[in-house]
Length: 113
Length: 110
Image 1 (cartoon, each protein chain N blue to C red):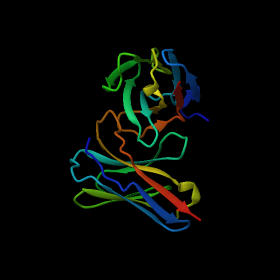
Image 2: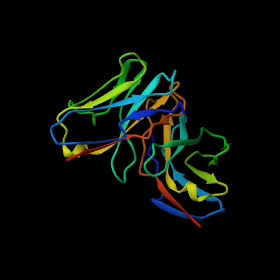
Image 3: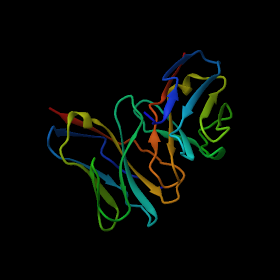
Image 4: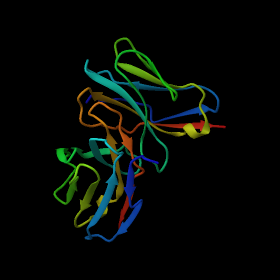
């Protein structure tokens, strides 16, 4: 399967700890997106990359959040000093170009205790 | 991106057509209508998109009204596996993001 891969699928952490998620997009997809989804809501945009450049960040992305895509391939999303409100599903998606459909991974479910 | 309005939930009998409406009355000329669905515990899945003309693929048909202010996603023969949340999204041709609403929970009943 050459779809979007996210790791881990589930993460349980204590409040105040740092966590990092990884996303491997579909090979050759230039664009990579991060979304967050809480129960009963649609996914909310966080940020996106074109190759290694981070082109847009949502105001939802506080200074505790940082995303990287160092070589234009995989991406990481780090949350520092986690809070209970960070508990959510974190989704990654990729697309070939700006107008192409997005392919989503299965997400990382974060629970902050 | 233009705001969309969808009913929160719908039911459909297995084997029948499911018609999911979407209102996007403030859509502008350079905005596409996209449909995605999300099955429980999975990421959203692309279904179909269109600008002006009706579109059909192996999954569904998209009917866009002439004034483009509303659209309908049609699943011609719904199965139990079509039970999911369906999102109607309006996106600029050069838009950097998809803006999801709360979608329609479609339940296909046996």
